[in-house]
Length: 529
Image 1: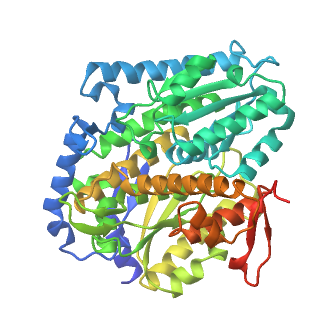
Image 2: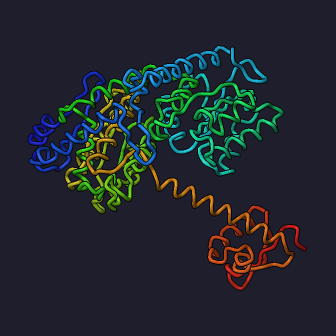
Image 3: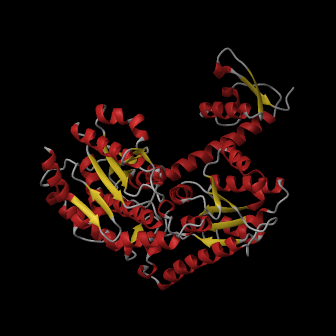
């Protein structure tokens, strides 16, 4: 296809959302001419299912739950007045609390104002807030954000070390819907211990975002934490940015959450359009279906040409993969659906894995994310009439063309800037695209049984660890992993026992003596002779 033919195809397939200045170009996706016609009925069904969802249909029959993240930016659409009031009340509370923190009305135990923000969460309670914080943060942030987003002790220690004496002016948010998520609970206990070591009251620096009556809610109430904000069972973690999970840390950081919500609300209005050619979320879902044959047979590579959007692909990994990656479809048939997502920022990708994308295995499709505005200040010319931003555009267009020449499919999503309104719209666009795609492939985007299976397996490992420690403390005799497993009553779990023993030894909680092979080492309690 020559350049003029490509231009005609570009004009024919460009979808522009004028109210947001956002456009989606699908012209370099190689879908056949009859694709739109063949997918018209399935997409009409997906749009109808989405409409029912927004009206309060039960999305999780096994849990009896509605899915209402769309109501978070349009509370008047919630199916019950109490929900509308809860959403608007929470947003107002967020504004009031952030203003009180910024003014010093709510202040730390020692110091006039809070200056640092520690967010303790995992998964959707961390990825979304991290993306927002990194994309929209500036040198003028009211509070500087930090994150506990894993249960890695060294990772948390590094954050505490970076805070140093500033812990005294750090406000800590603990985010957990159930209040029982082990990773978040562990982070809360580590933070609490750090405050205690510094001679500070954790309660006077702590805020909870959780479900009403949860374990965390009870802890915060009993200890007299500074405030509590709601998480509702009809909002999933990966779609919770527009609840207190995302809005509270953003508001405390100093980000304009009204503009963030407005961008999402405006994108929602656009993506309710039943004219598919004018609906960017529907087009995204159709292109995902085309690229992967409706089976997720190709990976989604996301390349944002903007440093501020570095974490976007990481955020999308959870949103897309946790929503779409399912063993069973809605009828109970085994389908093993999913789309793998990865990405890097341009033009760093040019020096990383673009070589393989162009010349290696053609098992992916690309989404280039272009941002028109380079920076707020006047750009520096690095050559006559050329800025570094011009180079960035050149690398993006050049990579896009190189991919097209080698039959690599791509889309280009163009944003006017990285502002709260644009970022809000970007999140809403992909939330809706995920829901529509899930309908096209007949899976439930709003539950995650695989995640729960992993949590149960982790709990079982900890049960084995308890049994191992009891067995070793009961005798002074050094024993192999097989012997420990047998005495602990888990003789069929020797490999797990071996891994647990190695971990405990590495952390000084057991002792070992080398054997003829690594797996024949002898283990004993630290109190053994």
